[in-house]
Length: 197
Image (cartoon, rainbow, N blue to C red):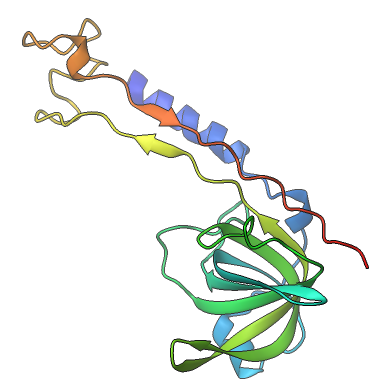
């Protein structure tokens, strides 16, 4: 097995060991589809759902989060790029600032199914399964990955730094194939505590 493959395998094992579920989201939950919840056949069971925030609506006693549902990964975080499972709404007691819980952010909620609500999408009346939430977990922004310049020789060409540690070869110099960098944006602020009273 080559050195490169060993490094890739070791990295994957290390990342897998770090995939832990945040403490507020740990628990046993019933695997219920949105369609079953929308039809009312699921009953008042506890679920852990997540996705991208579409809209955050504070009211007098509670805040409701309208969410584009996505499957959850091993950390209970919504998986980007997967097929959307539909929409749901999660409502929790207290005030949550729409300027913090903004559109497009990932959230995971836990709570009990609490019937359905009608909400318009344009002129269409959409039936949202409703979750009476006890936890609303706002995830920090994902890292942004910047790629390397185009290498016409592919991963195993003369510009590969594994085979050519002195540079790119062919007279281009090491500037032609700089290492890939990871730009980590500032994490999202922690969710504010709801106002009491």
